[in-house]
Image (cartoon, rainbow, N blue to C red; front, side, top):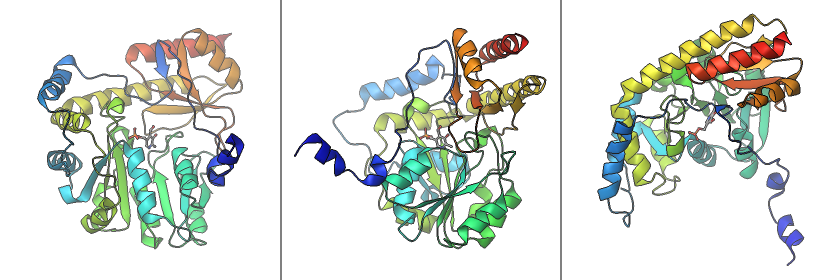
Length: 357
Ligand SMILES: Cc1ncc(COP(=O)(O)O)c(C=O)c1O
């Protein structure tokens, strides 16, 4: 078989995708991936390192990471049987789509949103039905309910706060969807520690609700690759059957329990990021040529008249932001992650110089 014949054998839905790509760029102010700007102190890392030095590397992790499940559940305020922890919340989303979606239960998302949802649907050969946000990028419940009419058992996947717009759903909006929908509703709350309604209390009332969360944002542990899902215990027990065994390595598993024991530090840092986000927001609203959208997350979406020129100016000052203008509805838009106070000062000085010119 020649190479082109082999390529033709790859599922057409996958071949039809544009690769999700991020150039590895080394800059001094990196505001393009919604990472937490604060690393963990050496003393905390040392707790994990000490364990790693003594724990045998030749043995698998525990089959059920009991301590980790307990610690995550205590943090989220749910029972340990309501939680599955995985290799990033992306893995949890894949597991959920494997368990819940099908040829007759397509994925319904609100566009523009996190690109990975569409990639997962394509990889699994599932149909993907978009509902759109309003013109000012708020959630449009009527649009969601309209799209689900053709797929009453479809899997609605909502991102709140939403990446890359920062929009969040209110409790009433979530209830409006859950009261009406006869299929599962996944709410991706990767950014919930920075704002927006935390849907966890709704789990007691809606067994068709599943929430995904992560250690990559407020917990400042993107490099650990840890995320989790929360749902009704009986539903979670079914989903757990198709999770890969040993999906969390012993290092990350132990690190998560250590980080959770320092949850106060994560909360304080998240509060600083929220203050900084609001400081940047106020600054942006004073620049007449630019529109800054309301955000409940650790980033702000802006629309500018001269996107490429602005990206070049900032790059010239060694500042990297994310161009999201290829997303639906986001012509001329950039996403600015919130950094440390010093990084944010440099970003604002760069924007001020660009728009003064
Ligand atoms: C909305 C959303 N969900 C999930 C993720 C992925 O998180 P994780 O690092 O836990 O896989 C991201 C990462 O940027 C995100 O923006």
